Image 1 (cartoon, rainbow, N blue to C red):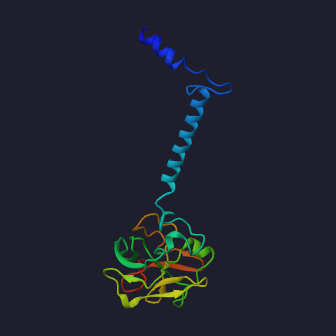
Image 2: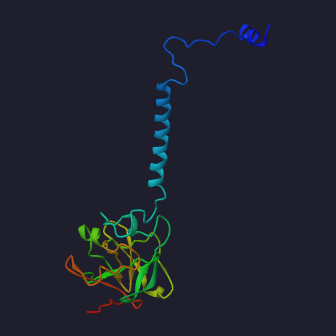
Image 3: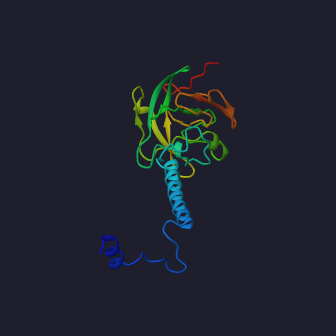
Length: 198
């Protein structure tokens, strides 16, 4: 008996597919496998696009619907930092990422008078703990004040501090001198006084 004949005799012919079942190489099974692989790939791409969030994930300068916007607060557990950065207006106060901070001339005390739509355009700089002073900042001038909703807003020399939603990158000062929501907005120097070049 030759080997081929013995193999056919001992193992028998290849089993025919059961009725209603298709072979592993059928077009339907290939389509199902491709669909599953495509769905997995899409899930990975979506995860990559939305991952890595945290404070600032909404992008600096995006309008904040309320004082709890991601970029208006220092982070879930870290204290806000106030620093100094050189700009075309001189040395100005910035947050820990170099984003410009402003005062609102309508604020006549350390308590903010900017809420609602105002806080959407000018998000308050919030801190869950006592703010820290970066190089060039007088820590004795740093403080916080309670906002109406209970958040702690960073103050400097008694001025509540804000971002401007029109600033897109660290170092931008496009809010300087704007008159909106009833008063003007200015950057501050390390002495805590407004910088007014007009």
